[in-house]
Every structure is written in C-alpha cells, then in structure tokens.
Image (tube, helix red, strand yellow):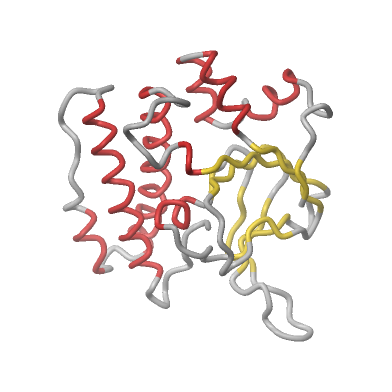
Length: 220
C-alpha cells in the first residue's frame, strides 16, 4: 500500500472517488469549504491485490474509507503453512472501517487486505487527532464534528444490530438498551458531547461482544 501524490489525482477525480461515501457527501452539502478542508486532511492510498491495509495487532489512529475496489477481512492472517486465511467478510466501496481501534486507542483487531479478485483498491484515511478533541473547532466546525460522530455511532450500532439478529440472547443485548440517547437541542455542542460518549460506550460493548468465541468481530 502506498500514499498517492495529490498531483496525480485532480480535485475533480478525488471528488468523484469520495462521492460514494455518505459522510463526505453530507459535509459537501453542509459546507463546501469544510469539504475542501476534509479532503486536505485526508491521506489517499492505493493498494494492489493481496496488499495488507490493516494488520491485526498494529497501531494506527486513522479511520479508513474504501473508495474503490473490495477488501477482505481475515480471521487469521497467518493460519499456517499451506493454509489460506479464512475470509470473514468483505468491505465494499463507500464503507468506513477502523472505528474500534481509533476510538479506544488499542491495537487493530483484524487483518484487512485487498481482495484477491480486486486488481487495485483506493482508500482515504483521516487521523482521529482532528476529531478526538470535541471542544476544538480550529480545523473542523461543530456541524462537521457532529456529522463525524453520527457516522461513527451509526457504524458501530449497525454492527451491533447485525450481531443482535444473529445472537438475540447475547448478554450485550440488554446492555445495548441502556445506552443513553440524546434528547436535547440538535446541532448543539451538548449533542456532540452525547455522541462522543455514545461512540465510546458502543465501542466498549462491541469489544465485549467480540470477546465471545461466537462473534466474528468488527471491522478494524
């Protein structure tokens, strides 16, 4: 995997690539200037067939968006001589991954590589440092940070809901119902604080779920 020089990708080409990611589209609709700032802060990456994007046990504070190609989530990147790694699931263009390790500042929980049937994948990566401080709006505005945390919360909740449908009696299901839901003023800093809290609580619950043998885990 390698970083892409911006001179190779024109602004129009980059816009077309990120157009399949709901988060980028939301920021573009809200504030074109913030969209440009977001693109400036994102690192564009290219990876070839079989290339590792995230390695289990690695450290990385980035959140990833798949723009083109297909990725495979592996159960074990090193299963042994003559044995191919088991593919748990796939990541398609427009999907975001890497939320758990980003939020919890812990090693990556899975190895993710470019699927063997994909010749090339293009990704965007943004460092969590731009979003971790929810009182700093020097780079990204309150609406942009709200959109970011809405995306993160939705991503983790979706994974938990998929798990719940597969294992409706898991112990985490009852805890999921107790996660506080914000009922105050929308678009406020109070909502951002609540979303920040929700994201971390949900991340902890998903990690707790992943600790059971039956769970296939989250993406990243």
